[in-house]
Length: 347
Image 1: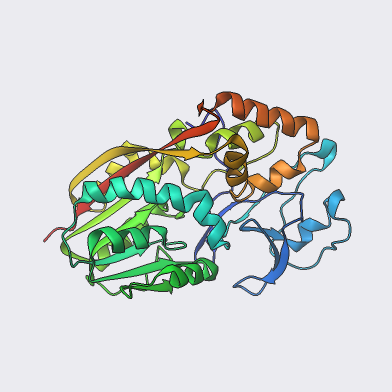
Image 2 (image 1 turned 180 degrees about the horizontal axis):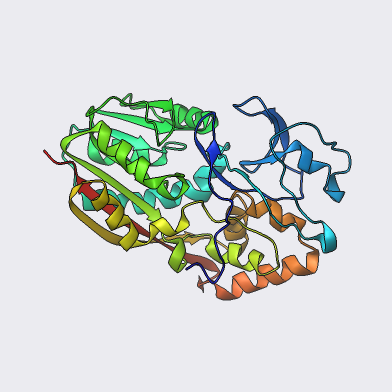
């Protein structure tokens, strides 16, 4: 289980417009916010990739100038003693490709290199990168695997725009879509992968079934995911310290599916053959604690929650995080642990 803390009960559901997973979102800072329209046409407030309903903003004593209006069902929260608490859930959307690259893209590439070495794919394959985000793993496939073609699928138009802009090899295309209803033809690719995505898919079994559908017989279906159940998520340390203040930092909707035994069983239940799994441990060096903290605050929801903390609580959180980190010569040496799984579509 996850540190004696139950996963949110209301975590089921998705954004009906593009199949987004539903997560909690609570914040009390508007410093980096902007108003925009979501894909479903509802007004929302985008903060660090998180959708904050307009009706919620009027409840925040730090945001008195923002008034409530019609929107999605609001998050209900308490501003008593300055804390923020989640009782209802909203979609988390990663809308900042550059910020995501610093916060997660670098980690994804490090784990992805080990993952691809383990897959040991042939050259000239057709790939589907499901939940491609800003294209970090897609580019890794292009650089290391000499593919014939890669289709990247993601629900976020902002992330897809970043992925298209960074891609220069002309081997990949990026399309908006849902992991549980892929816009990819049956048996049209040789390999389908999910890089750090499956815990966001509301129905992981359906997501795996979709990957199997689009892969030809004899092709591979594979994924890797941060192990939230053992502290493997790279930003879990600051998140846990913020949770200790009483704030709610949400877990992904399917956080426990990342256990290596659960992934192995999920692949077997999908009818895949030669199922294998392994752990991936990666390391990242930050030049200073300040840089580690800056990048950690790019994590959706976490940065906004931290800004809402009273100064003494914030100082305590930072000090406890610093004390728990491995620091060598002023540099932070930090690790993340992912679980990986692969299987073959029967011939």
